[in-house]
Length: 143
Image 1: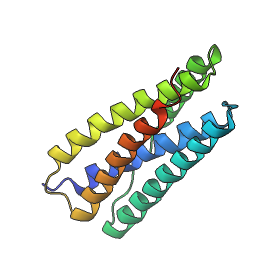
Image 2 (image 1 turned 90 degrees about the vertical axis):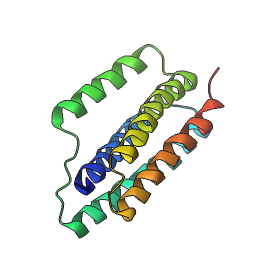
Image 3 (image 1 turned 180 degrees about the horizontal axis):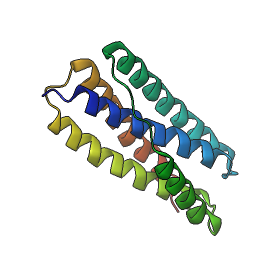
């Protein structure tokens, strides 16, 4: 079993979470420099998300996006966590926690789906690098 569809779907869902979360945070943060970073990260997640969709179409896979419940839960968590603290440091910390989870799952999936198509594994590795880079970029906003 190559796990092509499963790995690709993980990439699709993870990048969708990044796109949707960062889109919401763009409307919350006031720091212009930080907003620019969020826009840049949004763009990178969007590129990976669009690429995952294109590859899924190429292989005839049906991508399974995030479910309604997952979107609602994430939105509510985001609202709750930023209700009392909208500081750049707090938002940066939240994003770093999410990226750390992404790194852990990316490494696990790369090990689990070692026989997946190189094109799909490469996209997973790109997502892993994005998550790692995001953490490095976000560190400077912690206080």
